[in-house]
Image (tube, rainbow, N blue to C red; front, top):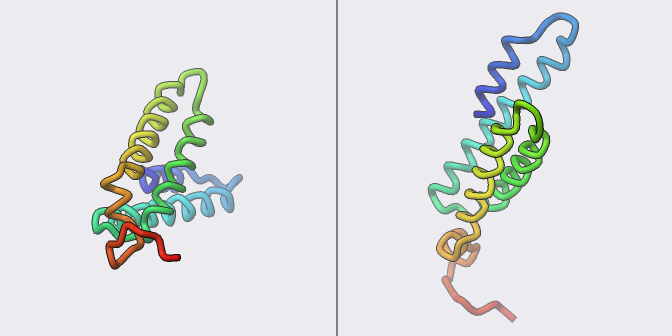
Length: 111
């Protein structure tokens, strides 16, 4: 979705806001590519992917808040529900166990 926003921004750039349009486009495309890498890491249960996944969902909750009100309220609800669902899935016991940074599999902390 973020990559789509990046392409949409690229097609709406005009000369009065050229630098803002280009930097926003590049940021959205890079952010979308990063999300693809995080999704790939989560699908492979890579431990590094949990932190960025949580961070991006918190950003999405803030984005949902920014859309609250007026004609964009439905967008806000969809973004918030999706972010909450992902956060719940990431913090479930099975997900936490799969993404734990513990190669030995021990349930006991090292003292």
